[in-house]
Length: 67
Image (cartoon, rainbow, N blue to C red):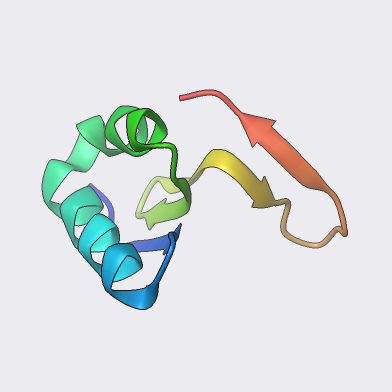
């Protein structure tokens, strides 16, 4: 479902691991990322989904997003 996943984590290795897991988890990724306390931007053919606090594209604002 997701063709790309950007994740904010404690370090690059953790972010890469979580992003890879999000791609594999598909529909379950937003819930899993939220439970891990990670912020993410998931993108796929049907659009994007924000998880946690992620900057809203085109603004300087952050948005808290519930999974």
